[in-house]
Amino acid sequence: MIRMFHVVKSYGPPGPPALNDLTCHIRKGEMVYLMGPSGAGKTTFLRLIYAADFPSSGQVLVAGRNVAKLRESSIPYLRRNIGVVFQDFKLLAGRTVFDNVALTLEVLGKSRKEITRRVHDALGEVGMHAKASAHPVELSGGEQQRVAIARALVGDPTVLLADEPTGNLDPSMSGEILELIRRVNLRGATVVVATHDPRLVASHPRRVIELNRGRIVADSGGKAA
Amino acid sequence: MTGAPLYFFRRALANIAGERTATGLTLSVVTISFLIFGVYVTIAQNAAHFMSDFAGRVQIVFDLRRDADALAGEALASKLRAEPQVAEARYVSPADALDRLRRDLTHAPDLLHALTESPLPASVEVTLKAEYRERPDIARLIERYAHAPIVDAVDAGDEFMDAFTRVLAGIWVAGVVIGAFLMVSAVFIVANTIRLTIIRRRGEIENMRLVGATNAFVKAPFLIEGILVGATGALAAAGGLYLLYRFILVPVAVSAPVISVFTGFEPVFLPWRDLAGASGSVRSWAGSARSCRSAGI
Ligand SMILES: Nc1ncnc2c1ncn2[C@@H]1O[C@H](COP(=O)(O)OP(=O)(O)O)[C@@H](O)[C@H]1O
Ligand SMILES: [Mg+2]
Image (cartoon, each protein chain N blue to C red):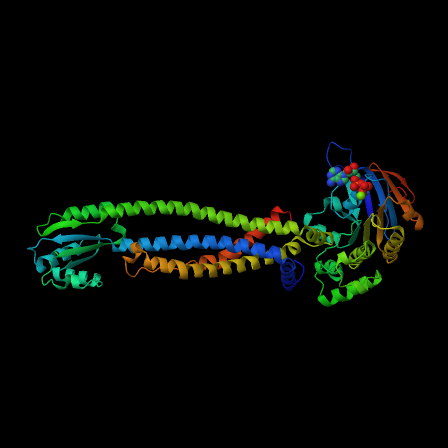
């Protein structure tokens, strides 16, 4: 589902590259942890997958499409298959919970009726149905992350990317969020969770790709790509 | 483009409703710049109108000798009428001249009451065609007729015309410069106001892009918002301009001595079609498009 071939990503000559000759293969339906200390290149890895950045050299393939060669106008269509969840939630303060989740479907041009039905389903799945008309400021961090997950899954993505999704949450909250992400994976989505928290991995062991200084230093489940 | 136009319209209205202070600020800036521009256009319009009105009234007056009779006067008038530069030439008898003076001095009718015979000379008044109102044309005509036997004196009003033309030329140059400056600053202000709006909404734009919004989808609500705010601002400015015109320009113009000399000069209110219509929305639309581009969306 996601393949990288000799990917180098450099943000400019002074520093070392953020990703350095990286090759890996994440299969369809897999759930993978991307581990490593701060600055290892985890965020960069994820950004290359949803075309927020492009490799300096090498290839990134997502669902068979070469992201590095994607035309600017095709990027939106790639992203419609990818849900992204961030450490800081990135919800719109001016919109209600319902409207934040609805954005994913509005972009697809769905009818009001379909949007209403699917948003309520998604909010039900993450247990936020009762707070549909609340604004993000009225929610706890864990609740905000649930809404962000609802926004990511409401479009039925084939890939879910989570960048330190529990980084701002206390441990009990983290467990609940991870459980929701695991459920998205069980529904068939390929999931990549970037984290530097070993406890998270321990609570729900899966394949771990370990990055350090832009290189893969360990991979618990990768065959040669 | 994905999504129904109605959706974009709803989003634009929601954006406006959600940021009333910012929208109000944008609207005031748009209104004020359009109003300033409109005041300029109105003044320029009226200066042009006044000038053509004035130029049309400039006459060459040939005062006739006392011994010239009406027949000789009419003959001179018809000879002048045959000149290619002349629009109209009219013989004015001493009695006609006195009548006219009486009419002009209605405030003091007693002053002229005692007169039985006109103290004024007969004359031939000549109006030139619009394309022959330049100084050399006037001079040429005067040269041809000033020495005719019945002509006593010539009043060409040309010295005044010269000064007047020079002043007007100056006003026009200043007007073009000021007008261009106002145009540019209005576009600049509107474009920047919209750019600020986009910067304020950066989070929203990022979210839209993240979930796969196309460029057109991201831009459409901003463009609609720009058109709505721009059109409202233009309309408000046009309303304000009309009030200024109606309650300031008209009374001032009517009571100003230099203007009231020419009875029948009416200030015009023309910029409707320039201001309220296409230009308002088109300009703010262009502004939003440009700001979108420079904000990188
Ligand atoms: N936009 C950027 N400009 C310059 N350097 C960057 C940028 N983003 C990340 N980096 C650098 O790339 C390296 C990897 O960063 P990142 O992918 O954010 O790591 P992680 O998410 O694992 O903490 C770091 O050294 C970081 O300083
Ligand atoms: Mg990171």
